[in-house]
Amino acid sequence: MTDSSVREFKMPDVGEGLTEAEILKWYVQPGDTVTDGQVVCEVETAKAAVELPIPYDGVVRELHFPEGTTVDVGTSIIAVAVGDGAAAAAEPAQEAVADTPATAEAEEPKPEGRQPVLVGYGVATSSTRRRPRKGGQAPAGAQEASAAVQAELNGHGPAEPAAPAAPAAPVTGDRPLAKPPVRKLAKDLGVDLTTVVPSGPDGIITREDVHAAVTARTATPEPQAAPAPVTPAPSPAAAPTSYDTARETRVPVKGVRKATAAAMVGSAFTAPHVTEFVTVDVTRTMKLVEELKQDKEYAGLRVNPLLLIAKALLVAIRRNPDINASWDEAAQEIVVKHYVNLGIAAATPRGLIVPNIKDAHAQTLPQLAGSLGELVSTAREGKTSPAAMQGGTVTITNVGVFGVDTGTPILNPGESAILAVGAIKLQPWVHKGKVKPRQVTTLALSFDHRLVDGELGSKVLADVAAVLEQPKRLISWA
Image (cartoon, rainbow, N blue to C red; front, side):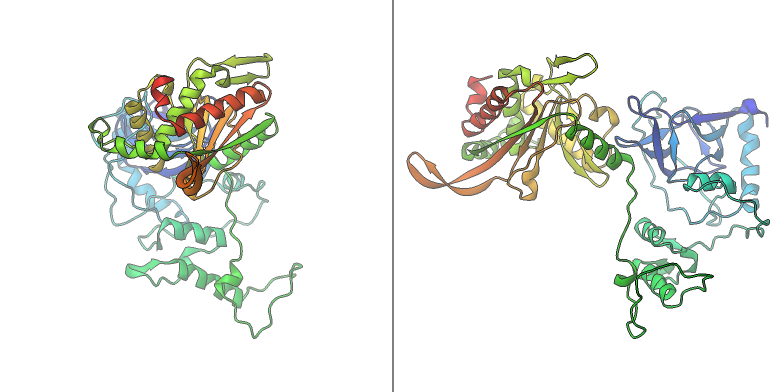
């Protein structure tokens, strides 16, 4: 096979200015046939998880990095034999399985029908298809590296010269079976799954099996040349338990969580935050929510208090446009935005993300309801694209869904205001001169005091509260 028949697919910049991404999952292995637009892997950037489609037809020749590796943008991650080289690569791929050391763990079954979410790669309309495996063998070699390279990937320095290692055993179908959470637990606790005795159905290793392996290892420690200083061990009479051996779990900070942490620290110590609060009677707003749910125009749309809160904030911004701005430190200018990309903070398994509704200021209430529904559904599925989280101008964070009264939210970088919405509760309230039970909530508005003074921030918060107290102002102030 000539080099001209091999195409190298490089890690793309799936966002704006991203420099790296972590390979979460490979959906193909060496020897698999791929077609233009087929998803080959899932990666996580500092903004979101994204599926990458391959932009040409061919046969996978090599995967350059294993799952869990963070790769720089522009680095080749997969080699594909194309054209005349594809046929030549198909048969040797089977032989390579027996000649390459086995990977550390078995590969999990791959979901079928994954659809690419990245544009610009000639996405095929048919569902993704993969070549079936033979004999239950896990492909090897693609995720293996030399000892020096693997040491670098694992965060260690170059390995010292050592005696040649014994030849690795050929790959077989006898792989430990375990679900991804169990594999992660074993990795965190330093347990080799090939040494664990499975107790689950069909020989599946369970969390209890992993803890039992740790307990056994602790009960009969391996001989050591020189014991390191440790805290006093429990008396021999005290039998070790999984609680004693797994008192802490360390979670690597990377991807979305790492980016969020850096952004929040940068925002907190760059923009001078001011937070103001107001408690408001939203009984009429809650009644309007129930009425809209019965309206045929909103059939199939997400109608909840957040919808009217978002609309109230948009009305307040229209009445006080200077709140919708950003601070340009380099140019020493205030940039007033004549559009509103409304961010909605969402808690996901990957961490806090803030996708935004583009040009929310121009949407009608039914359109805004549709946009909110789509935003929430996409975030819950973990399919929010990097583009959906860029260019926000102002944000809403609904801490009330957790039963919290309110909070002091931190600004998203590049934005001047963020509104926190507390829980809506039935409380005693003076209404028309009498104490009555009313639906009440507390709002908190944080703003950048470099470009938003107390008067402007107070006006915006007061307008939001006024609309929620008297939602008919949505018409009169429109």
